[in-house]
Each structure stands twice: as C-alpha cells, then as structure tokens.
Image (cartoon, rainbow, N blue to C red):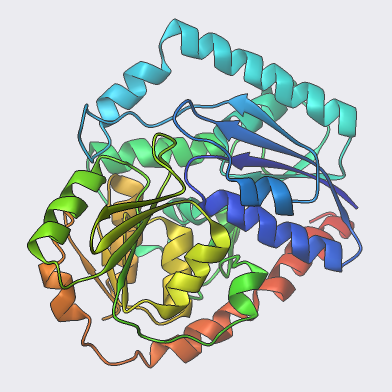
Length: 366
C-alpha cells in the first residue's frame, strides 16, 4: 500500500510518531510516498526528521500558538485572533489547495493525518476520494471514557473544537494513550499504544547519573532555568531547545548547557539522566516513562496540562508552573516505579496494533 503522511510540525512529538510509523509500514512491505509538514514561522523541521523519514518532504504554512511577549504561557485569545488575521487565512487557503494537489498527484491508498487541522479541510472541502486516518494523543479528548475529557472552561472547550476540526475527513481515529482503555466505537476512536522510535525500543538500558535533563519548546523558559542554575551551582543541567540564534551547544553557565535539538544526543542523555524536566509534550513524556525517569512537568497550554495530569496520576511525575527545580530535586530520590514493566508491555503491543488498524482494517474496508 501507498501512504501519504500529513504532520503537525509544532514541537517534535508528531514528527517522531511519523518516523516510527514509517518504519513499521516499511517492515510490512508498504511505502510512504510523500510527507507534508505543517510549518510555523518560529519552528524549523529538525534535521533528524529529514534524514530518517525516507520519503520526499514538503512544507506548508499552518496555524500556530501565540505567546505573550517574553512569557512562557500560550495566549489562547491571541492565538485565535492571530490565526484569523486575513494574511494568515489567505496562507491557510493556499495550504489547503497545496494539500489537495499533493494528494491528487501521489494518489495514496491512505492518508495518515498526525493531528494537522488543514488536511481534513482539504479532504472535506474538495471531497477527495481518499481514506484518511487520524493519529494523535489529543483524540482522547473526544472519548466518552477519558477522565480528562470532562474538563470545563474556555481553554478545554477550545481544545475540543481544535481536536474536532483536525478529525474532519477521518474515517477513524487512533488515540495514543499512556495506558490501555476501551475503544469508543460510537465515535470511531480506537485506543493504541504510543509510537516510540526504534532507537528508544532497541536500547532499554538506563542509568541515573548526577544531572538533570530538560526540553523546552518556548525559549522564554531559558531565563528561569539560568536563574535557578546560578543559585544552585552544584546541580548540572542539560537543556534542549530550538533556538537558531545560539550555537549547537552553548555553555550558558558553568553547570548549564543548552543543546539545539539533536535526536541521538537527546536519547543518550535521557537514558543517563537523574530526572527530566519538560513542558509536558506527549512524546518525550512517553520516552521518560519508558526509561522510568522522574519528571517535573511545566505545561504551557491546556493540552500539556492534560498530559501532565495523566502522567502525575502515578508517582513518576510532579507538576509545576515554573522552572523552580528545588521541589524536583527532592522528588529525584523516589524509588523506581513498578509500573514501568506494565508500561513497556503496553508499548510492546504498538506495532501489532498499527498493522491491524492501518493495513488489515483497510483491506477489509473498516
């Protein structure tokens, strides 16, 4: 079968999921013929994705989050206003037309949508005769049995609307989950394990060395990290970010090193770190759970708040509103979690689940 991927490019999570699924499909003798990535003005596609995806990649302009100037939290009102600006809307219309042209050019047997909103609009508006499957942790927000789906408030409502828009045109939704749940057949939602990269799965060995690992999507967090590191010179930190204004490796303080996003170095440090601090993106939380790393989660928007609440339901993670790591240092002494074995068993079912959902069920017209 021929697959075309459409991937949300914000952060690294959806990109690494696409890499993992591409590997699974190729092992089964199938082909990824094209990859389209929704890009934003302040993000670049990581070099490791272009190197490893094994298919031609094109980008299109996609909706993006807006942050208050110098702040670490998403401004939801500004996000909506900015994305509704005439220039942005014109760009998104061009993107929708571009997606349509690519689908018609490559004529895939199936489109896999990694939570990119514009792809569904292209399929629906132009009535494209193609099967599309949606993949994302966010689809749990539409599941009747998901405990976080009942969240109230403007932010949660807005997230649900975004999830519904990204699901437009999908004949079924594969919801990535930290843990097994019953499917929601009425809403065409199937629960599947996270899609971790082969580099994670093939090297389960990990240690606890005397440094803390961090990953930030919003560079405004850097000031908080530098302040804390100066006040605690005995604590070593390695932090990954996407800041093109600094070199690949930047020694900001004697005990603080910033790294540009680098997949191999990140996983090496993840396996060895004493603990992990992040803004609660789904993918890196999954990797930290796999390596049984204590976590401090500092969500920047409602979607990350939900990820953080899920992870914190066990004793593996604590949640904070800022990078004050003093609380986290106390948490680092926790014993290894007994849940790691069950989590790794769930992850081990991933390839079978995706082969069943994307190959077998396609052939049976489900």
